[in-house]
Amino acid sequence: MQRVFKTWLTRIGAHVSARAIHRVNAALNYLEVGRWMAAQGFDTSRRVIDRHEIYAQIASELGVQRVLYLEFGVHRGESMRMWSQLLRHPDSQLHGFDSFEGLPEDWTVIDGKGTFSTGGAEPVLSDRRVRFFRGWFADTLPGYTPPAHERLVLHLDADLYSSTKTVLDALEREIVPGSFVLFDEFSDRLHELRAFDEFLRAHPQWRFRLVAADQILARVAFERVS
Ligand SMILES: C[S@@+](CC[C@H](N)C(=O)[O-])C[C@H]1O[C@@H](n2cnc3c(N)ncnc32)[C@H](O)[C@@H]1O
Image (cartoon, rainbow, N blue to C red; front, side):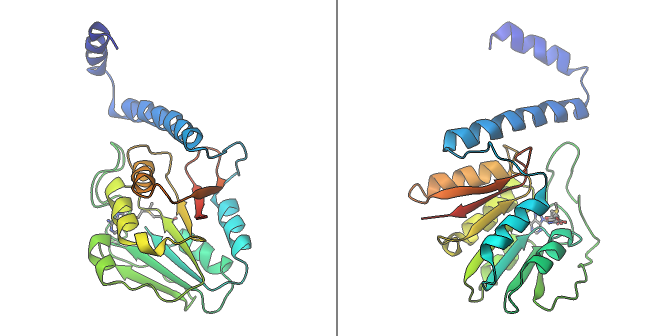
């Protein structure tokens, strides 16, 4: 980009709202996630409508196995409720991690620190297999020992790069072949996508397949295959 063009952009910027920058950034995100998927060799030609379809596909592949479902970013428990209905084995366990104080730092110019706070309230679910671990991931994960299970579903829905990276690093050894890793805002190139990209680079021998993706590559699921 030529210097004169860069200078012109800065002058335009003086008249642009934060929301407009947010939209331009979102457009870049969608370009980048499409590029990244293709560069990694993930075929995204078949896309599903929404996250229900992605969850249902993973659940049908899991069948009646004893699953450990770990959710990072619970908020009001919407996705936890769906998984509680999808996982059929009575000894499956569903563990949800959240501060319940919202995001620990700004995510976008629109979604600042504290977004998604429930004021500390945990969702109430009647499923006795569900358990919540309240606090910042960096504080709760070091003392956490995953219970025995046949298959792992790791749901990363904390939006931020820092939070996602904390979880991937802490649970690295749990992500064995056959584990599913599910993202909710994967199309954000500076956050969940960046954290997973770094994770793949740190494990060049590990192979993942793309299990399912929604229309905008925000909700995507991978399975480690080897
Ligand atoms: C988008 S919401 C989760 C939505 C939920 N999975 C659903 O589908 O309804 C993101 C959540 O991540 C939590 N969160 C983000 N970073 C965190 C961290 N480092 N430690 C604890 N909680 C965190 C926030 O408190 C927030 O509730």
